[in-house]
Image 1 (spheres, rainbow, N blue to C red):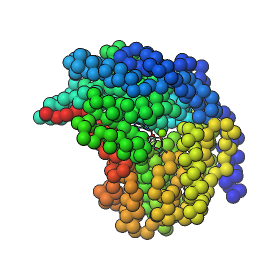
Image 2 (cartoon, rainbow, N blue to C red):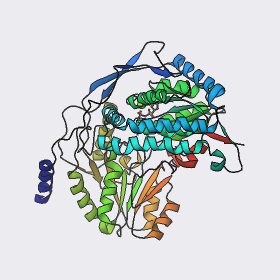
Image 3 (tube, rainbow, N blue to C red):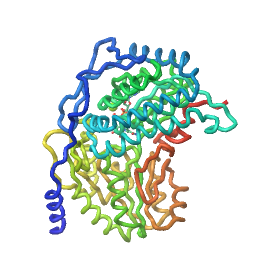
Image 4 (spheres, helix red, strand yellow):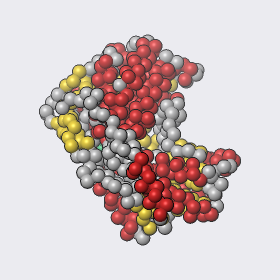
Length: 488
Ligand code: NAI
Ligand code: MG
């Protein structure tokens, strides 16, 4: 106990606040819709506020698009597809996409601050992960634009047409990049809707797209809520729907497009297993567990939210994990020392609180750090539950917050069986010194991605996506590109 207190004291003595400045960012008070290369007011003149979840202050007003605005955007995308984008040479397309990537790099500091302000994620993450990866997706796909015959040898890759893309709030700019970059590289045009709590970086991307001189209508960005998304999905002139978000909405979308010729990729929820064997490098594994679930407040579809520890090391791992999470700093997302920022919205905080209550009622043992939490804004301390049953709701259902359940296991067969026993199958982590065990598990875990001795690693060239209720189709890499072409 004494040791734990010492560690905390040391941290609070060593780290003076290190806030990133906001003086360099450029935000308007009000954002219209980006349609056909221009800013267009929504027909019904409705706007909603986007707030900073770390202090509940309004940042800007965002246009609320309805069906008639979506019609305008799809019409612009269709005309741009027929008239320009499917006609120009692939190397011309590549030039524009490279230009977008480079301007994103130039404006990365501003984009990182806005991402952190609007969504609540720590500036460190926005700066080191979201923004560089987002521009890398444009670079990567720009590289393919004029090499499609090598990407798909002996076939001709034809674009699909107009892609309707709907994205969530956990990685706003990165999700926009995952969707827009391959669509453009393959010759499609786009209507994209960001999530209602985090529209700002997609709107900044619209400015970048303007600056890059992309022909009008190739990318259209319409903001709004679920009904705006539904208007995109149900529009008869959309050829492809790409969605990332909740499994519930994924099912609605799948029903809505059944019986149509629309193609779809759905990237949905997860309840991913992080598995620690007794021979694992324990200190590294502790960092991997922390990164797996507390990274981005647990707002990660592939979060390692279920920890499985081999019984012989479980006491040690749990002790070390508690010591480690005691040092995590929860607070101002713009402070460079912050490990865990704000929960994205009040609604999401309520969902997380509901699950913490369920965990306690189910009889699990809870450990929550007693870190300082700001009075204003939406915050949640890192929380772990031990003594959980495989059937318990906190083990089976997606929480999407900094909440980890811990179970123990004895044999490989047991842990494979438990790890696969959820409706989801997005990702998994395996920590062991033994290579053959890793390969054994990667073939048996029903998960789209299996990380070995690491967690939450991403690269534009590797595909990402799920099994079962985590969705279908892949994003990233050649697989991601192939979701935007028909091969003839
Ligand atoms: P959501 O699935 O409602 O929102 C995702 C996007 O879909 C947003 O842009 C939203 O406006 C749009 N949308 C909502 N209803 C729609 C409809 N009927 N048709 C078309 N588009 C629609 O997710 P929400 O409510 O923000 O979060 C709820 C839960 O979903 C979270 O607690 C988490 O468990 C999960 N989630 C999973 C994500 C992932 O990356 N897999 C991302 C965000 C949430
Ligand atoms: Mg919602």
